[in-house]
Structure formats: structure tokens, C-alpha cells
Length: 317
Image 1 (spheres, rainbow, N blue to C red):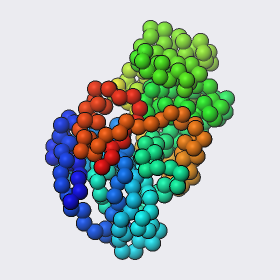
Image 2: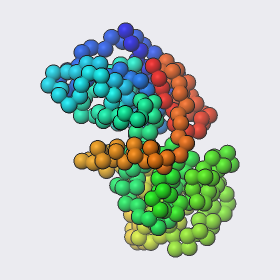
Image 3: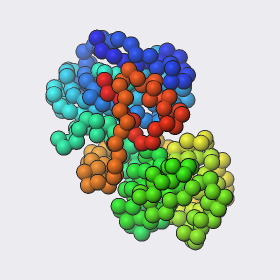
Image 4: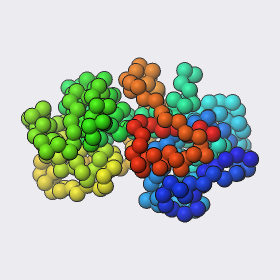
């Protein structure tokens, strides 16, 4: 028997319950994967709360890394013993799971499963921000709203490494100190002069805004982007923003959003290679996960809700 974390009703962290499970044999096109590490992402809480409904009882989580222990009929691109990872494949909060081989990517020999589960989904989202939602160019001036968020931090660091000038915002003094070395200009989004500070740094407006906050900062994002610029809405931690589409359209400002997976179609291999290469090169800086036992998934979710942790989280069986 192995452990799976299930929820039988939508709700708070307390609905996540460890249960014993006997995982069956893989079907055609599947493998049975034993997790070494399971990435925790904000979307996991949305599944648990029913914001993104799934059949009940449900298993949340979309990211993991581990070892293939059995392959199903017709599988010839993966072997027993291979180390693999995946992203955006729901059902990861489990010691062992069945998963389609199409969802798997190989883990490089110099990357641990813990590292893969820490950086893969967040790194690919950052890659999509810089190569899909908007094609970043050296010399661009970038505003990252929510630069202390897990993905926002990677976007800021990667954009800077690619030659962009990065303005980063966050909502507290503690987080302002945490992003200081990752951006060129760290700003406090709650400051009464926040918009004025951005305009002073970029009189003509920024080329692109990466929005991870949403409602609380979007009006400043709209006033800060240059005519003909782009606002990429990737997250909305404070709620969905109110968008004056007519006013932005009049200024030829593009507002883009939606799932990051749309920007990976046909490019998953090159994107994952770029993420691992950036990690090796030190582009992501210090990016270590807080580690929780799988059975303590509810504790991890409670810490997310209370904002007790800064940085990525990983579950280990």
C-alpha cells in the first residue's frame, strides 16, 4: 500500500486527507511512477477549493519527479528505472501514481528529483512569460508586479540575465528586502508614490508588465505600460483585475493571458532544456524549496494560506 492525499469535499487545507491506496498496473501508454518529490504550486489550492472543479474524491497537484517502476503495453520511449518529471498533469499528491508517457520529460543526470520538482513548472511558466506571452528583447524595460512570488522571482532574474532593465514590486518591507538583489529597481506596491516612481524610472512607460498580483496593482500596470506595450496577466493573487479594454486598445496596449501551456506546444523539449540550462548557469540564483512530508500536505497548504513561507515548496513521500 502507498499513500495518496485526497479531498472528498472542497474546502480549506483540512480537507486534504492521507489515504492508503493500492495503485494498479499501468495501461497502454502509461507508466507507474514512484515519486521522489512533488512540486507544490498555487494552482493546487485552486483545485482543493473547487475554483477549478474536478471529480470527487480528488487528488490535487500537477507536478512531480521520480522513477518509473513499471511500463504499460506499447510503451517504448520510457524504461523501468528512468528518472522523469512532469508538469500540469493533475493528481500528483501521491506516493505512486499512473501517468501517461506523453506527459513525461527526462531529468538530466546532474539535476536531482527534488530540484526538478522545485523548478520545472515554475521555470516553464517563466520561460513562457519571456518567450510566449511576450518575446523579451535585451534592452527592454520590464515591470514585474509581484516579483517576490515564486514565478515572478524567476521572471525577474531571467529577464535581467537576458539584458532587460527590471523594475520589481512587492507588497511588504520583508519581501522588498528579499527581491533587492534580483531586480534593478525594487519598489513597494503599497507606497502612495508607487506609480510616480515607475514613471520616473520609465518616463515613456515600460515595454512589458508581468502581472502576478491582479486587482490590487492592475491600474498602476495600465498607467505604467507604454503605448504599444504589453501587459501579460499570469497570476492574480489579489483577485481578478478590472480592465478598461477600450482605453488600453486605444493606446494599442496588448493584454495577454491564459494558460502557459499554449506557449509550449511543439516546444516542450527546447523549453525544458532552457529551464535546466538556466538553473545550471545560476540564473535562478538561490531557489531552494521548503520541504514537507507528503502526509503533511495540509500543513503546506495552511502555510500558503497564511503566507508563512517565502519561496517554493516540495512534498516528499
